[in-house]
Image (tube, rainbow, N blue to C red; front, top):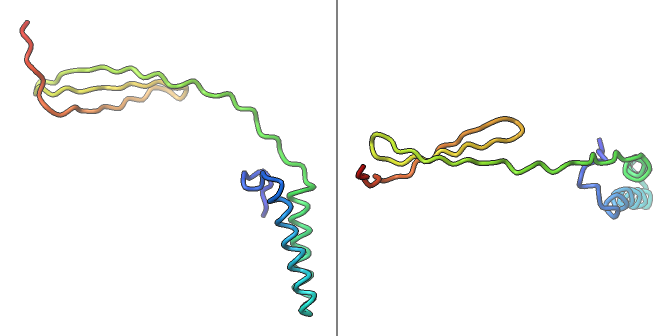
Length: 111
């Protein structure tokens, strides 16, 4: 119901305010004469206080920054005279290729 390891609950002030609001609301309910809702609100405050302040939070695993993927760019000319740029990137998960076509004709070369 409450995941104390969620990044939302990281600041201490949020972990204190949430149960406090439940207890304040329980006081409002008691003041208005609604004992049942006061008990429900107080129980929610106790539960939230236990989960957010008492229960041991898991330590975040140490992460090693990944190396930046290497990108190799090749330029080829097609039979129609278009220039095609092929980018081949490698990462830990494997090799992926993405192609990008540059519009327009290329100039003819004298060989």
